[in-house]
Length: 203
Ligand SMILES: Cc1cc2nc3c(=O)[nH]c(=O)nc-3n(C[C@H](O)[C@H](O)[C@H](O)COP(=O)(O)O)c2cc1C
Image 1 (cartoon, rainbow, N blue to C red):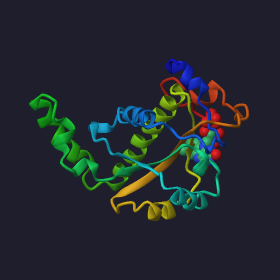
Image 2 (tube, rainbow, N blue to C red):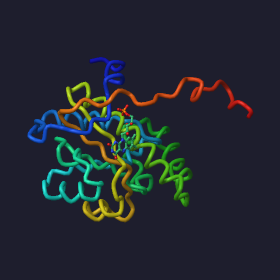
Image 3 (tube, rainbow, N blue to C red):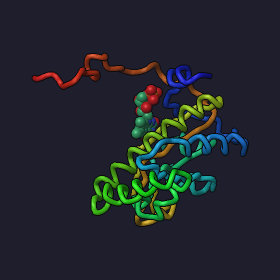
Image 4 (cartoon, helix red, strand yellow):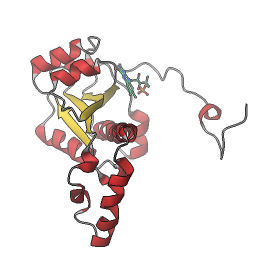
């Protein structure tokens, strides 16, 4: 399946075969691909929590409006981010780069994020959003369906997964073998509603 096909075929699927277990090799492949997602300054601030414990999944489902995907899907990935990744030995993000590139980037990272909690949080959401789409498209190309999710109690799920204080949760992505086809796209906006040239129209 090529990229265009995967983009068109991906849908938010709500019911999965609860008996399906994703082979270890496929899970690895999916996560290897997720880790190729781009991040600003290459800080790789995403953290992927794979919830495998069935009883923990049940508890998370309760904190997610009892949505069936949480326990039926083969994988429940809680996409988190380290808000301080930018400050944790940033040289490692550029260790293979030419020295002059690293020497430029490392101080620039600090200047961009230091003392700016909103920027740190925005970056967490940007990185995780991009990684989520990578996971969903990669899943599709591996023959799986997926669902992005933010319908859950973030504080409760944070407690359940022992989220560190300087991390945040962005969203879930569940991946599995879909059993119920999604309804047709319910209401796509027109190009005129969302695409503009140069500037927004004056109203
Ligand atoms: C950030 C985000 C959060 C979402 N949360 C949920 C959710 O909690 N439960 C759910 O069933 N669908 C959820 N969805 C799926 C959307 O409803 C779905 O993507 C949208 O209706 C478009 O449908 P499509 O993905 O099949 O094209 C979420 C989607 C996104 C992007």
